[in-house]
Image 1 (cartoon, protein in one colour):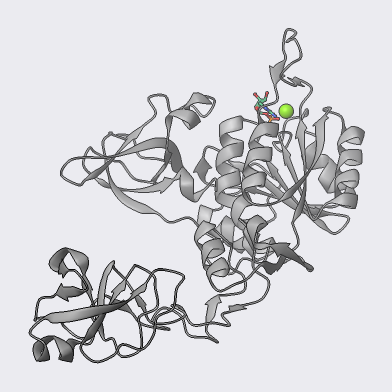
Image 2 (image 1 turned 60 degrees about the vertical axis):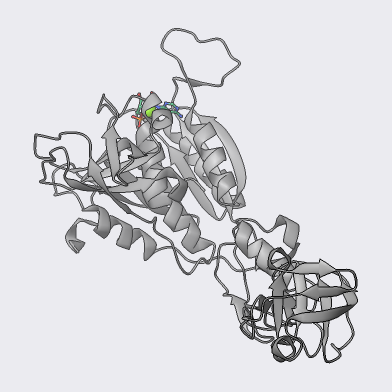
Length: 416
Ligand code: AMP
Ligand code: MG
């Protein structure tokens, strides 16, 4: 790690590589304190605060995996496969112990009766009034799901620090959890810096553009289960920026801003942070998204992204997202999964900085995953984000030829 660069306000020193910047940033993320009990219906994307221990076995009892006949396999040979059907056990029912020489008509999910050691699927059986004729070669244990084979009462089924996805919700419900103790929501204040910005719905005057970053922020933060405190658009003036930062710090756990972090004289986020709080500005050896501002204002962390929407989006996905996850108390999977794929493009000139190109992964009939990049490498092309289904990483110093192995990060790993 190049520690001499981490307080880089100048233009001249060497930029940090992505890993070093990420490590610096994550080293400064402090998990918030405070939990709340929330209905299992509503905990998607929240972070579990205590381990979830199952009070029950799963399955709860031995049960049938098929519609068919519950038997004792030793009876089959003794009765040459012909058994009397003396009971019927649907799901939700509960049978009697199986008397010797008998079978129970049984349905998927129903408890297997005491004495039964297999279920024979109905398709291979022949019903004859109250009797059934079954094949002789049935293995003990066939088509029975055993009590506790998935979960034992007392097992931890979800660890604390897990970000809860739909599968976790289903599991929690299946062990009977009506509510879960989760971390409170992270409060994130956002603003967009720039005199040129107006909101959709307003008429554009010359020189103005719509504030798209606000929409990125809301959607990305919503997916992370954050509470958004929206301070709107802040004018390109030092005092207005300083006031917005203090207002944000008074209400939020984390402050995010887009724009105004470069070193131009119309960039006021950087000087406002320097004057009112503390600021570390990192130049990161990546494209898009070179400057990333990090600091504290009134003891609250602040991350400022470049204003260019594509840069803002990419820096959010790569840096802000893991920072938020760590502040939320997430213990694992902070970083996205990277898929190995093959380039369907050429990158003939050596990349000076690491390139995060907007890319589309497609799977071909022979099973290879090929990645195309958006035709224009310009980071101003916002349609590149809707065309793409992820990002391809082009390492610094590398050229790429068609067919070369490349790393692909799906948006599903970055925006959910
Ligand atoms: P800045 O980082 O403030 O120098 O802005 C870089 C570029 O991004 C400029 O072209 C800005 O007009 C544009 N930009 C800044 N903020 C936003 C925003 N919230 N929405 C859309 N474009 C923006
Ligand atoms: Mg600006």
